[in-house]
Image (cartoon, rainbow, N blue to C red; front, top):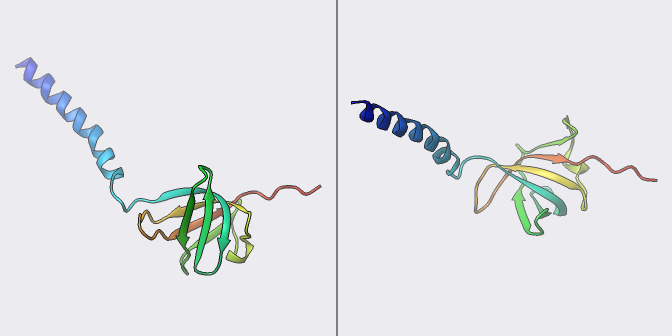
Length: 108
């Protein structure tokens, strides 16, 4: 009887561990992209990621822009700026949920 209890407990524990992995595997969770802005306009942004790949995201009226946790404007984003983009998780045509501008470098 003790073996069945231990086996059941082990299976229950493994199931608990498997649930978060299954939840993370779906497409609808948010993704983050980090990189440098290559192209930007009112409808989309293309960036070169930190891995050297090109990524493109749609910009919508709901996209929020921040600089150091303070609301900013889309016009504040310039080509060459370092950004972190939170997307909606879509793999074919991701939309930017939020764009966080990197800190500006001090000019000497």
